[in-house]
Length: 156
Image (cartoon, rainbow, N blue to C red; front, side, top):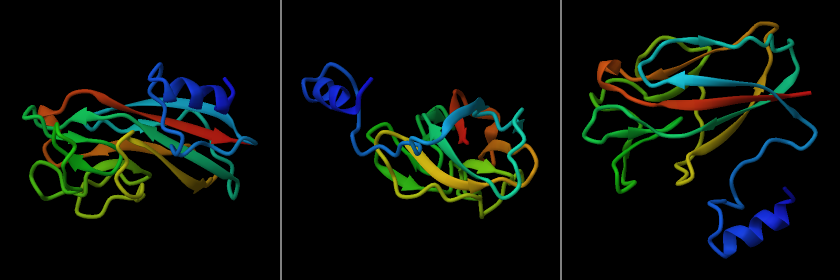
């Protein structure tokens, strides 16, 4: 749908659309969509990201990381009222969020997805390494997590 039509529908409350949401470069196409489980299992892309080629990764969604609720998106930990608590999860020990090619859950997750967004959509530029990517949700106590995030890979 054309962006102006989406803006008009959003203005009259017909759809939930953030006109400032990060969107992939129009010259890129969706290459793969990966469901990232909140329980921390490492997912590997089916796509080999060509070395030196620029891709865009788009992370979407929210999952519950404790049942309180204590919610998490690709970068931030927050409550049901969307009060951002931190990016250190329910135990305060791990840099929470969606890790790319970083499967060690510790105090420093990569990449950094940027400032908090109420639409929970984040976009980063990623240079291919000639291999698939790995992705997982970082949380030091994933046993009580529910839900998933979506990772989209856009490329040439």
